[in-house]
Image (cartoon, rainbow, N blue to C red; front, side, top):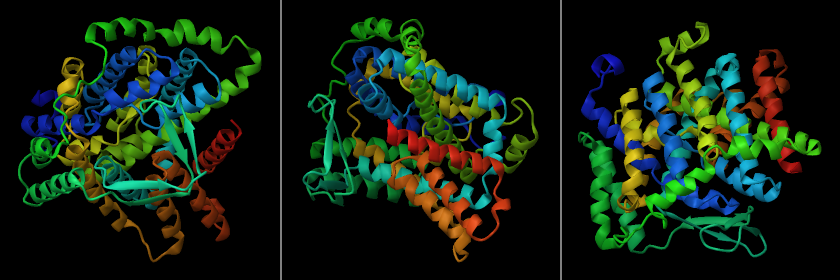
Length: 475
């Protein structure tokens, strides 16, 4: 194990990696409940999606850990699953089988652009100031996720400013609101008091540098949450049993291939729409991953300067970043075959990295926990979001140090950096934050008469983002 994962070389040990893997798992375990609830609205058997979500997470995370030897975990991405359900299936009228086929093709495209070095070119082309802004922006983003998960905030929508999508049930209905929504501190009741206690506990343990502080805090907060009513001891996880879930998995496994493709390309008139939808899937998936690796890997040293230099000069899979990008690309197509939307690298992996995870052993432990969750879903479902949310907030605080590398007094550098960081959090999307940073970086350079300083890859990427926004507006 020492030789395979190079633990001493990376300044870590088995205990730290195990705790980091458990921390990452609990920070993202919500996906095994949320993803089936969302995708089942399209008609996919819920039990089948439950198994597909877990198997896709296990496969992607294992490849990341064993092949790339980096502490990142993968699972079906939030946002991408919403796009799958409400835009592709509900809005455009594609069946869930056809949508899975498009996700499969998205993965193939991502593999192609990874092997052909396009992703590497994008990473090399991003100026240092924007890379630091992406790192700090992910800090804001992940802290905001934690603040939301802790239920610190409540949101009020003005009358007539929202749209309900779904069948009206609590589990499958999404409410889309515009700028008429106003955030505020949630009502100061028992759950909010518990959330503050959980956050304060983690702050104390982290400041005192208690070994395994983040994981210890999650466990302790879960126990403390019982008298507050935050832990539902009767939590049943999903409604269907394991046997039924595996039976329904038989309906989702391979459906993208033998049911999705025939319908997807059977109507020549729909092919342009199909291609545009695949493009939207691929663009978001690609830049979400690039942003996560740049933001978390550079700041924490997971991808060292020597590894980044190897990325620029190597061919094939000569660096950890090369391998990590390939693992992420393959996971999307594998997940589609299992029966779930885009599988991508989770920004919540930074919780485990913050707990000390530095190698693929962290990912292996996380994937093992996903396997265990097939039978222990009811127990895992009892861990309240308020117990895991502080980990994301604290890691977000740590990652915001990347902003210190930006020359804020220089307005040309400050404007793109600001929009990259702020849009990433407030748009709830890493790729949209990168898009905002690219757009304003190009604007600033053009206004200053230095358009030639912008790398051609940035111009192309910015154009693709603009095209993507136009496509989304039209469909």
